[in-house]
Length: 200
Image 1 (cartoon, rainbow, N blue to C red):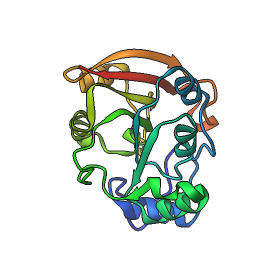
Image 2 (image 1 turned 180 degrees about the vertical axis):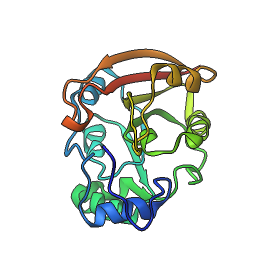
Image 3 (image 1 turned 90 degrees about the vertical axis):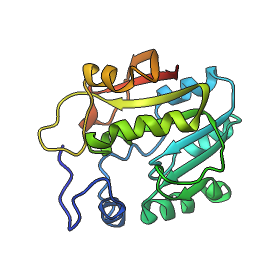
Image 4 (image 1 turned 135 degrees about the vertical axis):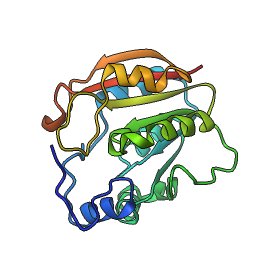
């Protein structure tokens, strides 16, 4: 699926996402928490979690209720405003900023959760994504979540292939688990995988 063009058609810029959130044109919005994350939270010890590119941040509440200290970040003011309005008492868990430059005050995270963040970035930024993950995860920490695989004639989104994933992560991470996703949105059906990448 090709997201409709707006005045700014660069998905690496907040204006691209602001226009879509302001117009409620968010076909990628799952409107909830995927089953794979629920399963992960029931089987993993709680720790410190980060959700980059959080959008409407549905997962914040799920992490919090499972005992995690969770922080979510997005650089779109429109997305952050909507997320905070929905989260109520947990609104402060969502910060507005650029994931790649935000000062997390030397904090390190046990888990970073991925959902439609990597595939929103042009591939030229993917190595920067991996480097930032290694900076923010504690030794042995995990990058977990739902990754988009397949082909896209007119991106965004920018899906991975198994070969691209191996090449991208091989120096910093090992793939500890990969599972099919049964509750994808129709537009992503058969293209999503739950991956757990462990920092080497």
